[in-house]
Amino acid sequence: MKILVTGGAGFIASNFVRYMLSRYPDVSIVNLDSLTYAGNLENLADLDERRHVFIKGDISSVEDVESVFKKHSFENVVNFAAESHVDRSLHFGAQVFIRTNIAGTQVLLDMSRQYGVKRFVQISTDEVYGSLGNTGKFTEMSTIQPNNPYAATKASADFMVRAAHKSHGLNAVITRCSNNFGPYQFPEKLIPLMIANALENRDLPVYGDGMHVRDWIFVIDHCSAIDLVMRNAEAGSIYNIGSDHDVPNLEIVKLVLKILDKPETLIKHVLDRPGHDRRYAMDSSKIRKDLGWRPAFSFEQAMKKTVDWYLGNRAWLEHIRSGAYMKYYETLYRDRLAKSSS
Ligand code: NAD
Ligand code: DAU
Image (cartoon, rainbow, N blue to C red; front, side, top):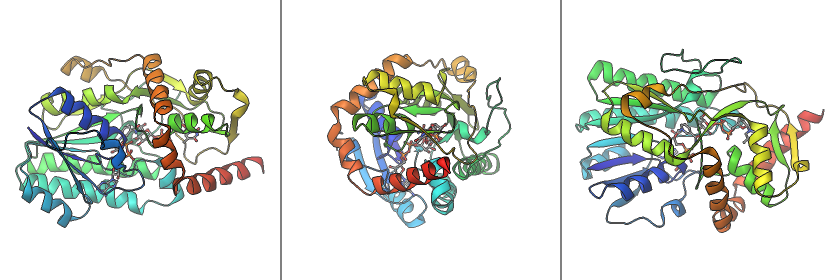
């Protein structure tokens, strides 16, 4: 089976490529990635080049995508490529999010139809549902109510995928997963950022009161769910993916400090993220019932594995933190801290 994976030099998709190649000897993967700040070829360094081909290209460029489809015949397309960070969509504006997340998805849908792809998987997110109150969980039937520019572009892409299925009969499915963590996650996201800052004895910026709740899932459990959906889901279906581990951010941050034996005095409450969704929680009973999916890792096991990975890969972390990323981070954080204390 030949699969086109987009965004495969990023966090989740690089784990997915590794997951698929290690489990299925008959799978080969073409990985299309434009290598934005989040794309990192070091994430793919150990992969067998006979079964994994990397191509640098932009999913929003018809020319780039068509040249890949002309060269390869794909059974499945799994679209991970995205601008993935809420803070960037607020700090830099939505344009690049619209281009990649919406227009890029449309290019892939059109090309998949034109070249007879058998299954298109869109990797979406729980953020499309907006925020929950104190109780309840998101189901696949919850209203789509995105509250930040990133989430709005992901929701728009979901609608284009739905339209490609309904209007043109493309065999497309959508997965909506909660917050991932694990190896290779870019250290702008909560868990790797807190690990990296704690290791350097830097402040750990917690937005607002830190009582915003997210449902944390180990990246490998997300990968196993995508695999099942790709192989077995009914055309046009949508699946929520979550691990029922709903925790306030502050608890996550304190746990990181505890594992690393660092003091809680490193925690700094800073100005809240605008439009910050208060609580996410996923009802993933549909994928459990229909496809028999279960998370294989406990939260504690997965956190230990994750922290160990970052400890064992200090060069990977330092490479990123010695580049342009830290300049952006300092600006963002300085800004939040200044506004917070005024
Ligand atoms: P990431 O930012 O780590 O990786 C994104 C990858 O996409 C990078 O390698 C980047 O170079 C590539 N990319 C960006 N724009 C591109 C373009 N125009 N053309 C080709 N490649 C491009 O992201 P991630 O956290 O691994 O997320 C992957 C997908 O999963 C995204 O679609 C995201 O919305 C979704 N998702 C993420 C989470 C999470 O917790 N991280 C949860 C649910 C869903
Ligand atoms: O829910 C799924 C989404 O999870 C994905 O769709 C996104 O691609 C992914 O980036 C992630 O979005 P979040 O905005 O939830 O991720 P982040 O790690 O940035 O933030 C997690 C929570 O932690 C959120 O409530 C904001 C808070 N936070 C984050 C950072 C970076 C802090 O308090 N301090 C921080 O420095």
